[in-house]
Length: 344
Image 1 (cartoon, rainbow, N blue to C red):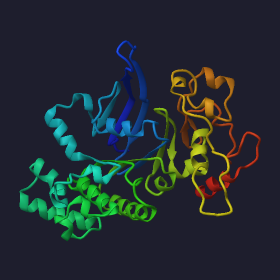
Image 2 (image 1 turned 135 degrees about the vertical axis):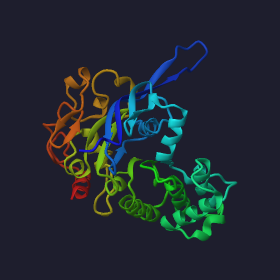
Image 3 (image 1 turned 180 degrees about the vertical axis):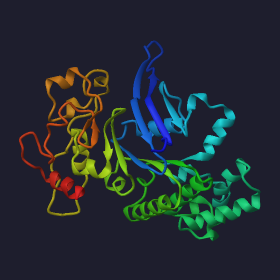
Image 4 (image 1 turned 60 degrees about the vertical axis):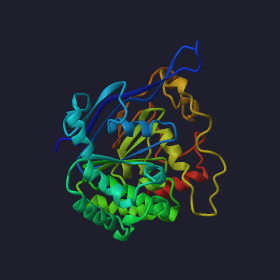
């Protein structure tokens, strides 16, 4: 078995807040003790509600944010041991695709200039060859080379996202983090970008982390999935296994929240009731106040990730819950049909 391309151990990030001059600073755990491995050419999805720590995790993986605790290894080198020249080499081997392509692009530079910029900054080739490679990369992501001289505002949202992907891939990175890369696009354009990512992954020696809250999209793009809630990974496993039998109540609720195209199915009640409570992160299960299956043990003992079936799950009742996404009373809601339909 080959060594992991990326390895994360005990990764934690706490942000300090101070609301007033005399107020005592408080800290909030955005990422809490995460362990993760990513093999070469593997794809993993990170899903969860807004505020679950997904984007912070992505920035920690790329060394854009310094962790409070824990370690990140890329190609066997710890981020903490990297010197300035090592970081430059690391930047050539990794890339980030952000959520909003318009804000990610410089409005004063042409598309060609922005795609070729990485080649010039890292002195990979001269300017003429850099622009030739940029034009070829544009065509590779499905845009004509004639768009090299256009500015971002002269392009559609889907075209701009393809430009951002071309810019991320121009240096042939081994790892790309996609942070909500398709959430700002309409459904038809999303389908085009998903097809593009799948074809590029097959062509290139590329591993990626796909961060999203959209479970409709992620199932078509990754091999494994990690579900985050208030900074912790609560379930991780093969994408087909998790969709077929979600072991954590939070994963079940996320799958049940996916809307159905069947007009006969109406989502009457929300699958998750209540608000996230960050005060419950330190003791017990952070999801207990919103979980219909919670027991007394959930308030006392923090569940650790453990193997249940083919997944890793942080839930005391993971091996006791039924396969179907049922309510505590045992009846199936309309959302259950949606989740079961997705698992097929």
